Image (tube, rainbow, N blue to C red; front, side):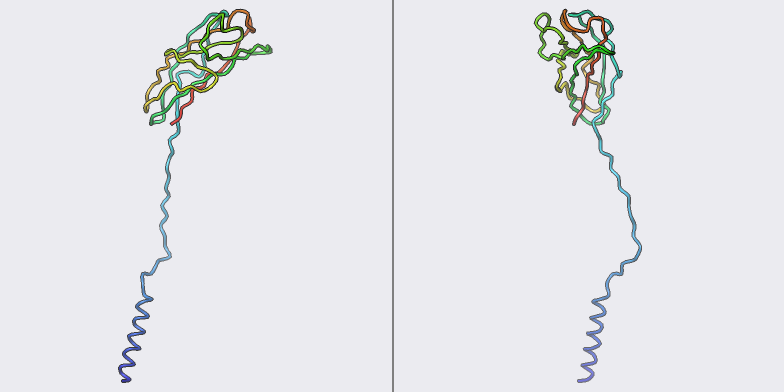
Amino acid sequence: MQALRRASTVLAVAALMGGLAGPVLADDAVTIDVEVSVIGPCLTTTTPALDFGQLAFGGGGFQSIQYTNCSGVEEHVFGRGTGATEVGVGTATWSLDDTGTSCPDLGPNRFRLFTQTFQIIGPTDVELEVLGAGADGSVGGLAFYMPCPGSDGLGSTMAFQVIFTATF
């Protein structure tokens, strides 16, 4: 009987020790640095500035411009413009009109912009097109129509901006 007790004690101790004996974790670890680059919308243009030269009130001009999708994925391209202000010390201002109206109905101090594909560029974003990865835009250029005769800024240089925005 005593041999049986000794055997069961040995088995219990062995079971207890066996239950505690598991994989031993080392004090050594391996760290892997991980990075991911997030693609952002990207447009490049053929020129950073345009100059329509000298134009008369009621006249117009055209300048070529091209943009390209440089993001590697499809993008939606929007366009808008700002009002024009006199360069220097003058105070003349013109509003960008998006109605498509022409002189004389356009009235004074209002100008118009169109793409070569006849899309109106106004003061708020308008979607111009969807470009595939690496594709060139179809805008082709900007047509600028001066304000009607009688507008402010005679003999002055006026400046404004055209903004092309790309989104996914």
